[in-house]
Length: 129
Image (cartoon, rainbow, N blue to C red; front, side, top):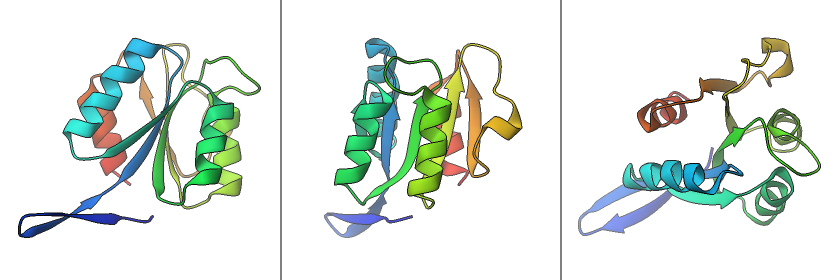
């Protein structure tokens, strides 16, 4: 996990970059704002294809937070698998309002937060890594 430091007056605060992958715009904005309020740098993608493009262009993403159900070439579980294979240091937090994915369908280095969630649950999951 890479952590950048941002200087604020006399303190150096580590900044963790989180990629939020959510096709529901309002939900994505809510969780992104909450994460930013907690000190995370937040990037957003509406689907897995956009998420892959962002991951390919940046080397500072430490965690992705992805919904399972979304449009595009792959769902959130396939995205999680692709991220786990191509970017093993990246932590993965998976969410869905449907049935919890089976453990063997989730990458080993991932956590699950069920919908509906409190943003504090997402923050706690990200900090748990």
